[in-house]
Image 1 (spheres, rainbow, N blue to C red):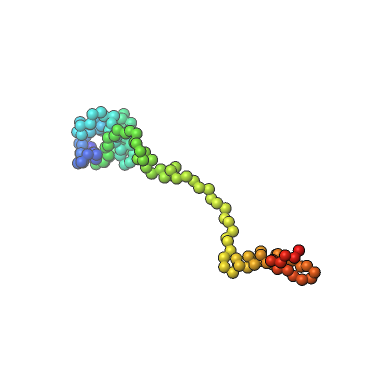
Image 2: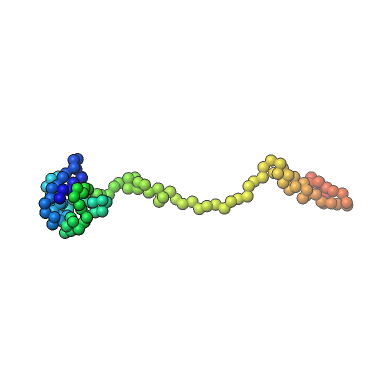
Length: 140
């Protein structure tokens, strides 16, 4: 059975005669070829499905003649300092502002002048002795 390993610069081809080969055997071959220190650092995936179980045989995983396995190596991770640790987290960085209730619109133009007229003049008129008095009248 011929398998292709994609992971380095070039595509690695493996010719396997034994069908009882496990995922761990493939990892060991890749570790020798690409000079990886430990076999546990190698991650294999086939058709987007990770091959995590080292004891499984390749036939039970679903590998067929000419299949391509993607190989990658675990990278060291660590704490990031500064703004990089919050990259992409805009939702928690910006505070939530509560929605304000709609206030009635203020009057403008002719409607405002009419409102001022009724407020100042019409409502202040008092009738004394049958005569109307204006807002500046001192009679009371």
